[in-house]
Amino acid sequence: MNIKTLTQNPGSLVCDLLILPFFEHQTSLEPHMNQIDQALGGQITSVFAQKDFTGKRDNLLLLPIHGRLPAARLLLVGLGKRTLYDLETLRRAIGLATQHTKPRSVKDVAIFLPQSLSASLRPEDVGQAIIDALLTSRYVFTKFKKSQDKNEHPAPLSNVTILCSNPKNRSRLLRGALQGLAVAEAVNYTRDLSNHPGNLMTPQSLAQEARALAKSTRISCTVLGKKQIEKLGMGALLGVNQGSALPPEFIILEYRGKRTVTPYVLVGKGITFDSGGISIKPSRNMEEMKFDMAGAAAVLGIFKAANNMRLPVHLVGLIPATENLPSGSAIKPGDVVTALSGKTIEVINTDAEGRMILADALAYASRYKPKAVIDFATLAGAMVVALGPEYTGVFASSTTLMKRLQAASARSGEKVWPFPLPEGYKEQLKSHVADLKNVGNDGAGGGAITAALFLQEFVSYPWIHLDIAGTAWMTAERAGYAAGATGVGVRLMLEYLR
Ligand code: BES
Ligand code: ZN
Ligand code: ZN
Image 1 (spheres, rainbow, N blue to C red):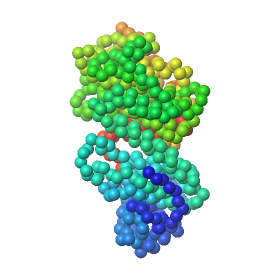
Image 2 (image 1 turned 90 degrees about the vertical axis):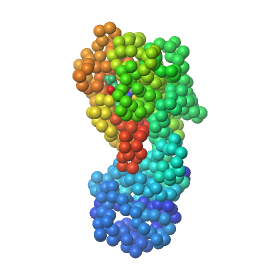
Image 3 (image 1 turned 90 degrees about the horizontal axis):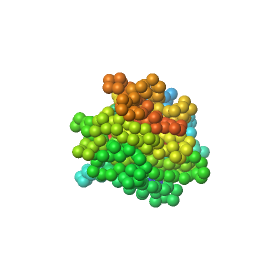
Image 4 (image 1 turned 30 degrees about the vertical axis):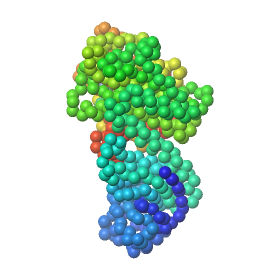
């Protein structure tokens, strides 16, 4: 795909689709807009006058052109109130514009940026937001649909042109746009991995993906198989794996964008299917539990983008991967396992498997003497109840880390909400027979918090835990973005590391 930023008059550009953004109740048109309006015989002024289009948030209007412009289609998009305008507004407007034009064969898209759209924001951020929104809103997962419906298989974009009125912004816009391309590709890659069904995205497939990333010279990959996992003593990961016919994998990635500095370690929950095990889940929506490796997918996506963007950081990625299934050999409630750290865990509920495999990965992380460890996990159903689909719950070992993450969240558009790690709730994890039990007290509430407190027992460094149980998957399409995996975590972490 070709990305260009030009200062050309949008009225003279040949393309399949020209997007013109407007604020609510916009009274005057910029000179370029005026020219387009004139070429169309005053159509833009008249749709405003007749209130067929008001510029309100989510307003869309496709105007007939009848050959009066070289563009094949013209789409007016509303941004809402000028005072509320931010990058998120722009991303949303582009998402809806894409959805609106999906059935049409659109390969060359241009978007005109009036002066007012980049005045209050950094041109780099605007360029990045536009390309990111364009590519992630066009994403569909159609690998297993063999029909030829164009709606389901939109043509890939060949050209995207950002037209700006201020020539000074051109190169900065382009720089941002290229970042946006790297980010969007990584987000869509992460979505692809999570959207794959459990029979085709196994622990072994995750390991294969990691090895493929390591084809780049800056990334290296080591995968520990079952024998090595046994030798190390990862009893919690092995316990969860007991019911599966497939062996576990422990995936280690390293990206060196910078020498000799202590790394950030990124840990991703890699449960390729979570049936609950012997504490089996109800069958309703159980098929969605193929996305229980969304944390692992986010880590792989972050490595992909960090490498493409040549981020000057040192990263280590750790992915404990296994299925969670019931069988005659499966782990049972009441069983006790010894984790890598030496702590013993009494399994009360085999469906609380994410914290078990993460316990071993978090203990393993300490050998890197990390600057910080950030884990991504679809950990607790209670988090879905607490925050719903738009906010990721965050736990951090210090307020400094929490603030830094919140700043990255504001820049990336991925919303987060802080949670506490209260000492007093640790009582709930006491077991009569082992050092810890794997769930809090029945009916005590705060399930996402006790899950995080369990993880904290295995942490000995600065740490952030992101519970993406509610945000990694959308049951239905939202604001032009496809249902299914969201790729959450990738944008957030790339901003954090930048
Ligand atoms: N993978 C689930 C958490 C989950 C639930 C993610 C719903 C997304 C949507 C996790 O392994 C799990 O099953 N957790 C249990 C813990 C409980 C047994 C203490 C839960 O949340 O019910
Ligand atoms: Zn579970
Ligand atoms: Zn799970």
